[in-house]
Image 1 (spheres, helix red, strand yellow):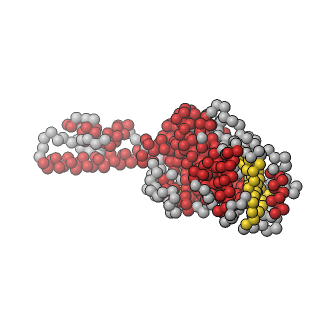
Image 2 (cartoon, helix red, strand yellow):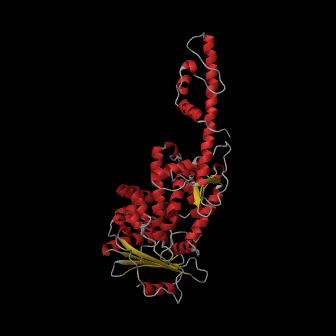
Image 3 (cartoon, helix red, strand yellow):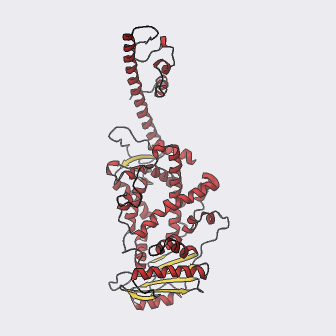
Length: 479
C-alpha cells in the first residue's frame, strides 16, 4: 500500500475544498508542479495551450483523487487496528464487496468522545443476522439462567396475558438484533454488526449506530449493572436496568445523529406497520411491550438524567440504577435523594399443597398498566396502575393436563381509592376476556377465576386456577 506523504496529504485536503490548481498546491502559477506532471504556465499562450493545460489539470485531479482513496483506505485500516488493541480473540476484519471497511470504529470514537467515555474503541466485524441473534441469546441466557424466561412466560400464560407458555428469550434476541443492528460479544470483546446481505430489512443496518453506542456502554458498565447482588432480579428490576443502558444508548445515538445527520435512522416505515422488521418477530403483544419499554421510556429517562446533570449524572446512575419501572416512568422519583425503598409483599406461606411456586416475581408498574390497557382505555389503565406500591406474582404447576398453570397475583396500592381504580379496570378486563357479565368470581374456559380485595382494602389479588380445589386453597394462602 502507498505511504501517505505529508505534502501530498496537504494537497489532497486542499483539493477537496475546490479552487484552482496552483492555489491547491500553494505555489505561484509559474512554479506550480505535481508528481509526474509538467509545470503549468497559464500567464501567456493560445487557446490550444490552455486546452492542453486543462487536460493536464484533469490528470492531476485524477491523481489527487487516487491519493485521497489511498489515504481513506489507510485510515480505515488504522482505525480497525486501533479498535483491536488490547482485545482478545479478535476475528479478522471482513471487508464488504467494495473493499472499504465501514468506519464503525471511527463512529465509536466520535460517540465515546461526545459521551465522555475514556476507553478504547470497539473492534468490529460483520456477521450474519442469525449469528448476531445467537450472540444475544447466549447473553440473555446468562442473565436469566435456570429457565427463568420460560418460568415467567408460564406465569403470564396462567394469568391469561399471553396466549401460551413459550420460551421468550429467542424472540427477545431476534427483536434486539433488529433494534440494534448488532451486538457486543463480551467473550471475544468484539462488536458484531449485521451483514446487510443477511438483514431482514434496511432499518436493521440503519440501527448500527445505536448498536455501537449500546455495545460501548455494555462493555463499560455491564459488569456493574448486571452484577447479581441479592440473587435473581425481578422482572420489574430487570426492565428498569435495561431501561438505563438502552435509554443511554438511544440518547447517545440521538445526540450523535444531530451532529452527523448521515447516521440518523432512514427507515420510513412506522413501527406499527406489519412489514416493519420489529413486527416480523412473532412475539406476544404483552411481551413485546415489555421488550420495547427500555428503549422508548428509557430514552425519556436518560434524557431527564442528562438534563439534570449531563453525562456525569448518567455515569453515576450505573452505580445507583433504577430499582423499578415506576422510577423510569417518573424520573423525579429516582432523582429524589430520599427515594423510598421498594415495598415487599410478605406472605406467611407460599406452598400450595406443600409445593413451592416455580415462579415468585415482581412485575412492576409498567407490566400492570400494560395488562390493563389490553381491555381498557389508556386513561383508565393509567389510573388503575397509578397508585401501585408493590406486587407479587406466584405460579405453581398444574397437574392433569390442565390448559395453564395456577397463578396468584397480589397487588398493593397506596390507598383504598387507588385500589378501587385498579379493581374496576381489572374487572373490566376479565369481563371482556372471558365474556362474562362482570362477576368478580366465575368459572369460564376451563379456568377458575377470582378477583378479591384484601389487606385493608388497599390490596387486590387476582387468582387464576385450573380447578376449584386450588382456587379455594389460594384464597386462604393470599388472604
